[in-house]
Length: 140
Image (cartoon, rainbow, N blue to C red; front, side, top):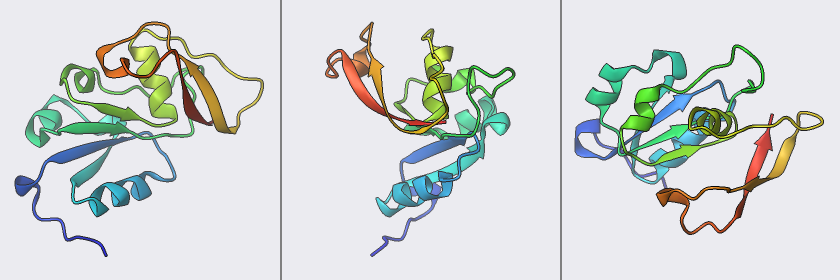
């Protein structure tokens, strides 16, 4: 049974930054089913004022139909990285986070949905327990 979610003032909050994924509403539903208040905002409508007033405890970058290899492609607001909160990046969100934080994204032979391997070359605090590789879902 779905737990009712009280006002945003009474709960920790998660901000979902949407890059056009078809499943963003499903992501929000799962977050809310776990008793966490969340809101979805388009990537191009998130600014310093929203981040400061919403004060999320975590951020989710959704997937989307773009590729960071295509120019121009959407980017996450820089301020999201400066907040010091955990970020879960899914699909396109993972691509843009990687590029914006100095990583490299390479295209495959064809666009596809499915498992992809991620090689971790330099550990950060958030990846300290991951070893040298991790699985990811390729979705574009």
